[in-house]
Length: 200
Length: 200
DNA sequence: AAAGATTGGTTAACAGTGTTAACTAGACGA
DNA sequence: TCGTCTAGTTAACACTGTTAACCAATCTTT
Image: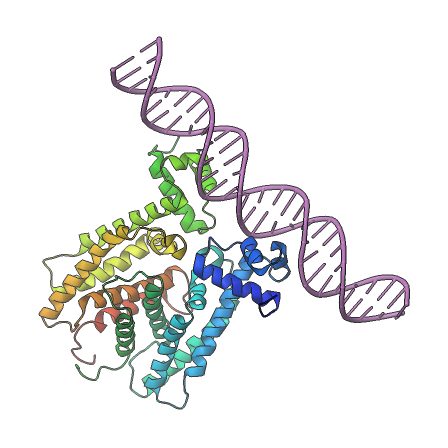
């Protein structure tokens, strides 16, 4: 084989992620993955219980990568506002740098999400805790005003996700400049949570 | 038959919407819809070209209902800020009042979205135009500061959608009070676009 | 070295999927 | 009364996820 021969399990995940992102998720069939991997369809079941399990693994993988990316970039020694901005921008950066990974986190909807074990979200929560702590510091330092940091963290994340998903799902009016839209939205989200200093 | 006998076409749409919302969209099969409607699977093809077409019709239906709902509630005689708030709250109200309709708009992702004719979005655009005009009025009256109302309108919508979808998809931490989260987020979105009067 | 168990795959089959083609029974108009 | 249209039907095709049964190496143990 000409391709570098990585273990079948990883190969399956890679192929699945690309099929999912490029052809949408009705196009993702076990037989399709198998054909692409040059293997029989049932071989996939040696590594994954079923299609759901395969999808969940992809989600976990993505959540992990996103979390690591955020935690790596934030500098604990810098100021609170810098940390705050860093988390938000890291999140967005990851989404646009790895859209196929980001999208997967939200692609699989209620259908198989209901079957997705809640505990698997614990990894994702750690990133929230990070943001919550930053907000708490901000409040202590008088830089932010927020009586409920956890709700605030989720609100920020939700708004950010909205902005990102609109762009990635190409639901933006084509009269709008994408980069400008992203920058404006991020600024709005960030500034909205800082104590208002003055009308600029 | 005991049920009020509405035309098969409408019956199919109703059943599809409910199946989609309750059982997720892998559970939505032509045969399933047909069985529920007490009719053969192929009868659906008398009213819809294919499954895609059926889904697109559902989307259109929902976009229309959402647009009408917003346009009905906004009072052209009230002040700009009231109109601004009205549009935003109407949007959210609709989403939570008719989650199965709202979700459908965003449920069908890239997969069959790519095949969804762009012109069909024109109806949705009308609601943006409404918001854009309100923002333009706000800027004229010195109540808002925004050099690009179209981008602002999309940014507001995106953030709002993020908040709504997080709630509807039950991705909210269960320590968080849902209503509080929604109210806080909406307030943040609204206030962020108004000229900052004072630190409250 | 021989025997047994484990690993990593295979093929065949089942039930369910979207969709097409060909058909039929009834209503309506000429 | 004949023909056409309407609103449905059944049968079939190619595909789907998944299971069961099998096989050929390799690794472990005696």
